[in-house]
Length: 148
Image: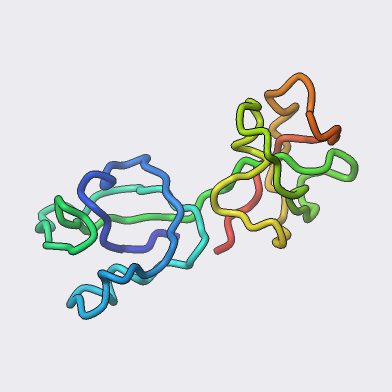
């Protein structure tokens, strides 16, 4: 289900994905707060469309201003423990990984999912992009359902 919100003009393109991190200090006193701060913190979203004929509004956070867009929560690709990983089951992340050069790092530490959080597996994607896990973890690349 889509939600209408305000987003910086540089990000306001269909297909753009972002994680909503909540209110910034500069948002205090803004007349558009209720239209901007209507998403769930820590959730990953995708812009589905830009509202036509919507004006660009001034914003203390976005130098180009903000525009009205429609967004929807999206699944998050993540590496999880391979044992017991199947679509429909719940799983969580294995924990932090210091190996930022690994091709799987973005999936072991994905934006939009906390380490203490469990999510339902929407689908199995396949093997992770790395050849060897430097932490000796047996991992499966999956899509975790959105939180909303």
